[in-house]
Length: 334
Image 1 (tube, helix red, strand yellow):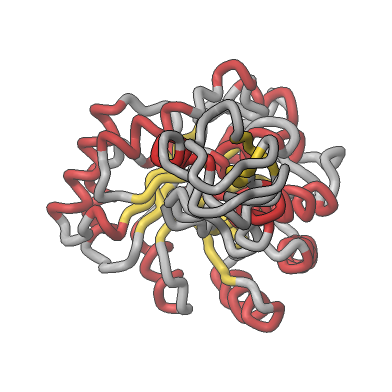
Image 2: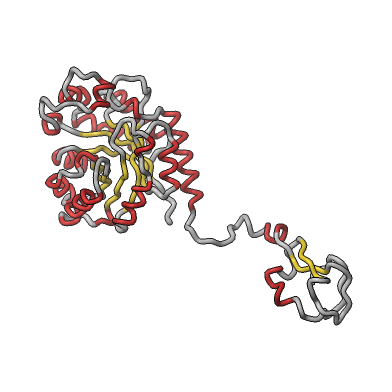
């Protein structure tokens, strides 16, 4: 197993429509040593109708009186902001990502150098959109929140038929609730995706509170971890409550790095640091009492003791029954 795991700090719309706050989110992600910081690029008019309702969690976090359209309009950034954010990310040494919600946004993001396309869970069933993205030739990260296995299969077929091989797709298991109840996370579904679609990579997009669930996903071999980040969970806005703050992001990144480093390649063999300890910790066959030359070696005159510099007790059955070629003192290795 390749232990590498890319970490996406999902800034999303937690900038609250402010370019300054967006840059501060880039700073936080870069300081935490995340691999990517990701935003969301959309034209509200192309994403929702003017009377589309909010999700329940959005009503709780940003009020029930306004429409989803009005909320998103407040959070929309202009194209010029994303151009500047991409350049700022480059200056800070972190890769820029943004989720496009329409094909014009996707083409724009590719034109400013974005190297992969992130597709939201809400667009997994938008087959016409997936076909357009699949024809662009970029790697695709596809969130699978709210989806059945059959819907994921349909989405992958659309991408592949449009020119994107499954080897260039990363599927992110996800629970689309903010925050997501831990008992509904079902991390094993990530393993189901890996088994069902072995040509694709698999990862996890997290909406739970805290950092323990994404760290567990890393331990299960996630190739990508995505986690919402905010400067302050108390800020107004739809996603802050289900996000982690910069100090928590740093802890999560450090934990994921440790976990993925510990996964290794799966081969069972002595590690480099273990080898010198084998002589100290293992045992050898030694004389349990004085043995005369020519005496038959048996459990009556043999035992096993440290160090492991002599004949291994793994060879016990081969040694017992042979004759001593010389005399041995008590505790002397055979």
